[in-house]
Length: 475
Image (cartoon, rainbow, N blue to C red; front, side, top):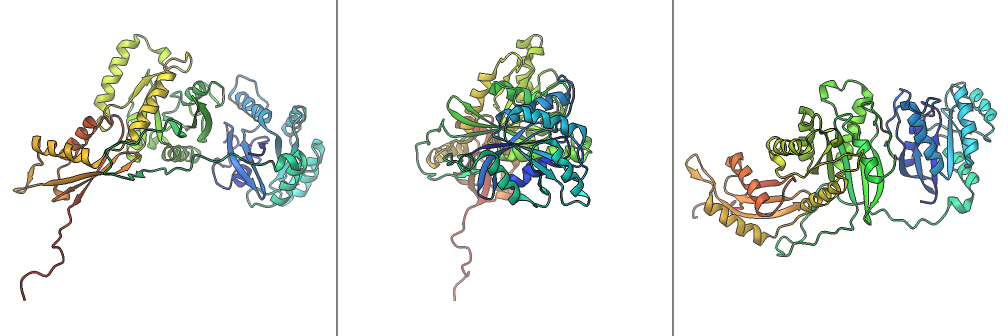
């Protein structure tokens, strides 16, 4: 992108609303509650002929460094350090408060070009707040309404004036390599005997999900080696689904941090419902989903429901047993956890499960190796010839049962999709096929073609009758 703009200001002045306006989508959570945004979010933005990266930040609050608000403030200060221009947002409707003046001094000392944005200028009585904004000494305030899209041409001109035309219109050479199909891919040549080689350079999208306080944000910070996401002992810190770009061994990775998912019955507040919905959207966008399970209290009912959700969405799951540094007798506990994994998660038999500790760095390399292996299986394609040779052996060893005195016939199988692997079987009476036999076929496919730990789809179809539709009898 040509440049980076950071949106800052005290809580509830409309920073996330402006962020959504600039990126053209409702990505950031917006609510009347102050302090909704906690982490900084980065996304590509467009303002008429300007293309740039925009950073949404938490509201500036004057608090002690060790508090949650203090840690949020540090995230905002880092956004200012990364930015080429700062969009300082004030509320023209309510006018200036003491915090606005305090934070204006901080922004001025940072030495970055500043555009003073007077939001909510469409409100009655906003003229007084707009005039008062001159007192900050940050130049002419730009009246806008992020909610209704008013004042955007003036904001565009102010940004160009602040950073200069050369910087604002720098050539953009970077291409977005993440426009891939989100749900399966057609198998191009099902009859080819050779399996396509796995591309280890292709960008990869990974979402980290789990219950509140399972260590998701801490795990991502440990992987990328910096305090990019807000963490702490408080449960439920993360609200937005935050994406982080990372280069791992020359491969582009996009990591999605998500809000903790509690049981549905416990989710009452509107804000938490929005956070969970954001997490579900991140799961659908991802390819591999890492389920963070607290090793000290694993396999709660909610953990199993989260795994089941990921399987139903068709994502590639990997389990990370977090907080491993708190576990006594690790070998004994690990054996117990792996036994529980096989017993409680039969739908993804053989799923990769790795103990990790973000505090010590243990298991992080093994976790990434497990992610790549699972992604490779998730993309696996098996030729039609190999599948039908397997089917012949299955039918000879364990044929389908007879239903209502008539034996079911399975005639043909082919792979129609990858991501996850999906197979179509031609049989005589699909509706009568027992689910127990379908599960037997899925388990056999998983074992025969080395596809552990990923969802496998099997669709039964009736074989075409060549005589259907013809008139019976002779004239």
